[in-house]
Length: 203
Image 1 (cartoon, rainbow, N blue to C red):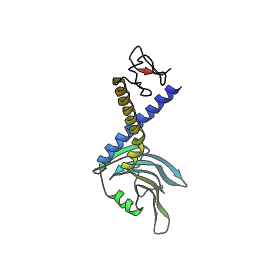
Image 2 (image 1 turned 45 degrees about the horizontal axis):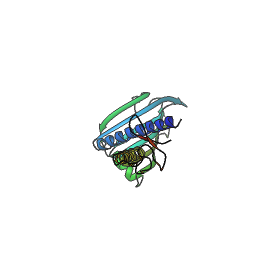
Image 3 (image 1 turned 120 degrees about the vertical axis):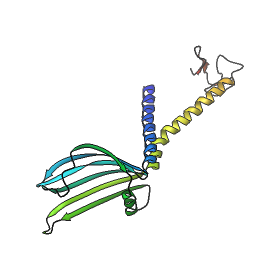
Image 4 (image 1 turned 90 degrees about the horizontal axis):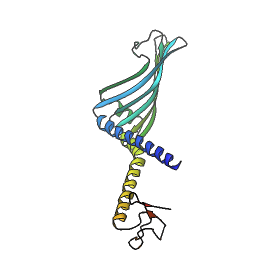
């Protein structure tokens, strides 16, 4: 059971490490390209056409996650180009994220809401736009995803180097006791060398 749990933990660390590397690539790329993926759900409410869905984007050192609700009359003023389903795209990086950054204040993590209400001349509703946005710096997201797996890899490498040095020095790899006088068993912790590969194992 312990071995299975250990394998699951290393699998999670591996996935986090992959996400960490992907965030680094997006971070560098974000200063000249805006990459985004989004999903749109179409519907109708009280005779109005509605679109809702999440979007994930990377631009100018920021990762944006937002949820947008848009509704307009049956004759849409913005066209019918927003088709349902998953979409993705890449475009030249612009300045709109920089503007949002100034609008919603300082800090590496920001939460904001942008909304638009448009009405016709006779005060009939035309276009309703409501967006809730979470923005986080690439470097902070990279630290969150990479701190645990990278620390685990460094500690595992240090343990491996320490065990190798102890083995070459004739010491117990479990407790470091000098085994030159008692090479068959460690008198300190009871560990014995394995007959197959020479590793020290504890009883």
